[in-house]
Each structure stands twice: as structure tokens, then as C-alpha cells.
Image (cartoon, rainbow, N blue to C red):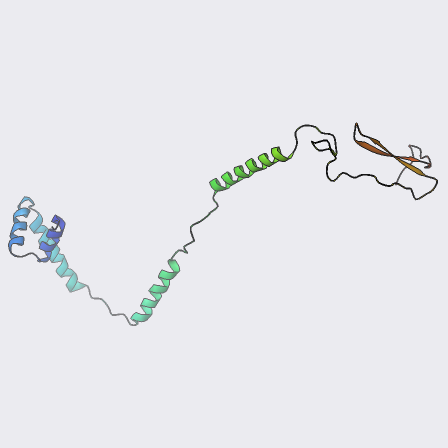
Length: 171
């Protein structure tokens, strides 16, 4: 079934005939300006056919080639859909990174004070040095290591060094 607009266009173009034309003209009785609209449309069409002379193109293939090149140049480069950095996404990524850093900081760095060099189990922590042998290059100097297990401190006591007054400049 054609719509009113389709029938109206076919009526103006003269494509309706017989019973269809008679039925549509009865339908147009409610539109008094329809006949005047048809006459002005036909007049305009005739005027355009008479007065619109199109000059033939000298080189149509070259013209088509230029148009196709311009169309290709104006096409936007389609980027693949995926992750695009925008300010909101960058802000969310920053907050996520801070959250992960805070979690790792809390998980890996102890919050209770522990003696230096001791792990939670009370044994020596990895990476703590142990003095195995101590000797001085000069036989007149003796070196004695002393360890205090309560404070976990080792001190090397040197005897036989020459006395240096506090005012001595060590440059």
C-alpha cells in the first residue's frame, strides 16, 4: 500500500491511471491547493528542462580521478578500537597505581620495630655480615671483635693506634 506522499508524487508525475487515479482524486477533494501545487511543479520542471544546459566535460576521466583522490584524502584514518588514553582513564589508572603501591608498602615493610639484622623468627636475617677473621696490617695493632647479642651490635676494638687529638684536622 502506497502512502499519501507516494501517491501524491505519482499523481504529479502523471503515473496514476484508471481506478487508482479516480480514487486519489476523490481523496484530494479535501486539499484545495493540490491542483495549483501540481501546475506550479510541472511549470518549474519544464522551465528547468529548457534552461539548464550542462556543458560537457572536456576530460571526464581526469575529473573522476580528482574527485576520487579528494574523497580518499578526506577519509578519516580509522584507528582500531581499543585502549585510548583520556584524562578520566589516566586518573583512574593513577589511583589504581597508588592503591597497589599502598598495598605493597603495607605488606612488605614491617610496622613493628625489630632489632636490626633479625627476622621475625629470631634468627639472623639474610644479608647480615658476620666477622670471621680480623687482622691489622701492622703487628703492633691488635683487633678484638666484641658482639653484644642483646643490642645486636658488633664493635671492633683497636689497640695500639697512635693517639690523635680532637683538634687534629683529618683531611
